[in-house]
Length: 226
Image 1 (tube, rainbow, N blue to C red):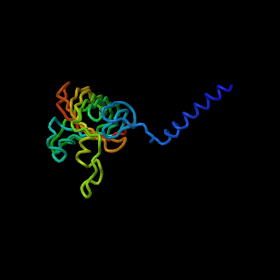
Image 2 (cartoon, rainbow, N blue to C red):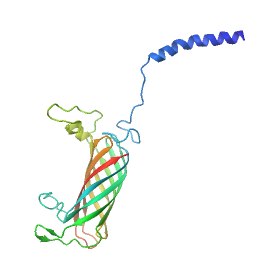
Image 3 (tube, rainbow, N blue to C red):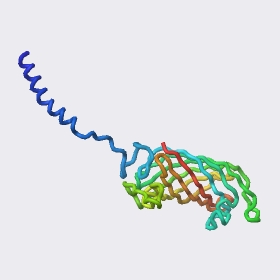
């Protein structure tokens, strides 16, 4: 019994200084996911945005593959447009980007463009898409540049931050439109505009197939990331 008391006292004498030293050490908090890592963590933030997402958007319905005229030229929405919902899962570590996405929309189609009759082909007005997206950010950054007074009111408007938060990508997959299943290819760019929120702008081209003429659509989307 006496020996046990001596051992216990010695142990307390050794541990007491160590406890005091540990109390003086700074506390280290868990670091969020940083560039170069995939997976769940702090949610969708610039340079690190992986996980599920869902959102809504609009679709510009072009009459052919020529969208150089833009909105003013009447080509992006030349034969109408659609309201749509989309969702999917993505991986993005600030550089490499990959995603799978499905969407559904309802097309509001016009029958004339700048005085010319447009043959919309009839069929269903519902639009479906199943896409794979693969991209790479050529301007990654782990630090946010501060906005300059009188020039950039928010951090995202600083060119360096905008480039670091945006990822261009190639996309391909299927589109169901006017009752026909079509193969589409295209390009797009995703931009994280705030924690948990991102915009997505994409262009899809469907070559002439199954009796349908070549056509193009442009999608403007806002997504919530979980």
